[in-house]
Image (cartoon, rainbow, N blue to C red; front, side):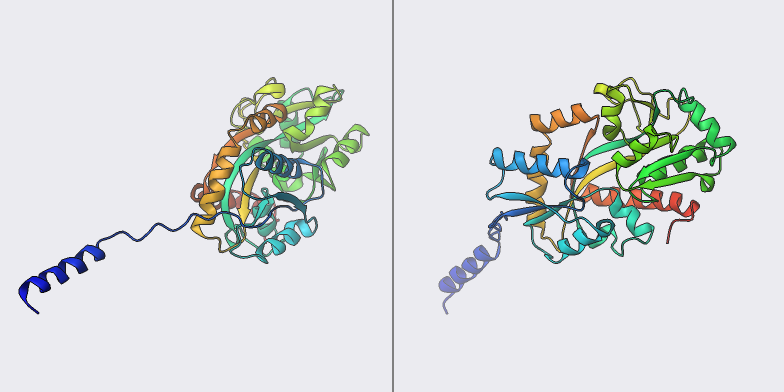
Length: 327
């Protein structure tokens, strides 16, 4: 080969060797989406899922149809098993909750958060503690003093399992007040509605529940919210409720709303859903939901959500270990 053809050959090889690889085609759904919920219809998680489904489809934010699929049972293990039957498939996402951490810590579920794909955080629903309107407990300091002197002196209702964020809120308040959280007299109910009914009937003295769930009772005057476990006062209808931090007790606990997918999702699938969910949280419908329920928008992308899960897992495990509930 003469010098000129050899030079042209070398230049051709060099040219193609430095060309960028063609960008991979972004993933998008090719068939209907299933938005999974690990509880029965009704309640906060289901409400979030149905609003997401409605906004995504009505605003044509996704390319296919979407439906909400309820897989209640087993403390969330049923929906988790179903989700991971579709490993690596971006057509399945779940609206989850803090139970993805607490159920594993307390031994109710064998699955840790890392057995799934973190996609995005949507919002926080901070935990409030409520009493009947005519309760002798006039404010949060009264309850803290009671817990300090004898944590078993009053029955506290929670839903739907021991060791959840409602329970953690009561335990942290007792601990911060100087009482013994192990002595708490906690009564577990099947739903928030059942715990409120028991409170109104005088069978228990207080209820710890996501503030949004107690809002109707507060607004109609049947209930009083002593304080909310938020870092700052909530806006909207609960703006008049003090935080525990205001009252001198460092208690911040939220029942948050993350979106997860099955294990093994690709980076392209995660990026697709990060984009759609970020856009969803900017809609008027979502902002109105936050204003009406007292929830607080808290968007995190996949990487930040994974870090948040790890930090919250450590904090929850510390509290639940002290209560003797960690396995």
